[in-house]
Image 1 (tube, rainbow, N blue to C red):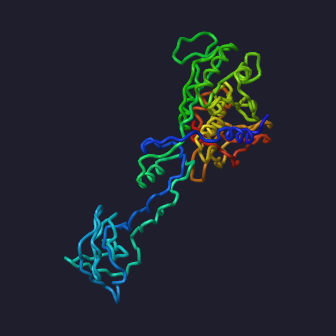
Image 2: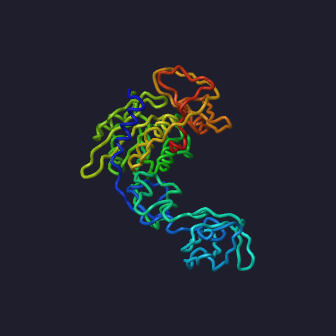
Length: 408
């Protein structure tokens, strides 16, 4: 069995190179991954401006003992270019307005006494006091946003500030999700003995979409070899990634692995030393003139499917978009209760994490069954229990991966 780190490295490598680029409007860019560096065409800000309502002054005019009396000439307000500041005068100025030529500081209005057309100052201001200077944030020609950045609201705001209406981003991966098993039925359909309302496709589709993909679930596939091969062959033609659920182990009715191999998929690995989710397959199929399609085979138990897709499928989708950080880092938290563990596999135990005055605290949940949807719904994090560990103790510092970072 592969160790977690090795399996993760392989699956991220499968995601390279990134998918082709496309141009999107700024309004549609949030959540997408930049395909090219964004270089600033201008200085930001583009001119010196005031950060306060007050009076623009030239510090060289503050000569001799206080107080200083200057006539007020004109005003500078946003959206206008002011007249130059005459020697020995001051100018009324408002927040965001351009600093007039000849001025090099602003004194906030609370520190100025106004009497008609004259203003009195008690203290000598500092050069550039209460101002922002041209290019202070970003110089023309500098990289504003780097390729591989997954765009959040502040990134979009910066692009807008640079007068960009569109951005070049990686194409969204197309994901086909195929659940297998005679026992599956659509939620809300008439119950039949021995069947279950299928839940995995709904969870994985939501996770894939949160990771930036276009994801659709295909019709359930029965435990029939020929039907399974036909379903896989069709999905492999239409998607960038095919995710199979169930039947990936080695039981008599586990048809996924032989069916994948029969339709031309070369498997890289099919077992990983983790819990939940030991039966996990990764493979690819070459397509003439097209990018290889990647196959991720997940176990059928609900918790196992969601955890393994979060740990491996989501980083794969991020890597395919050129995301510079496809797997987000663990955080450290202190446990509130002990958790037993049998050595041999790295365990990702469902848990609840919360911020407290003394730092992050994490509570492993009692139900860690691989089929338990309830504990997945009640958790918001996974505690990492090392494979050689015999368990974690109460008040022990542990690595934790947040559900949000796994698109859960």
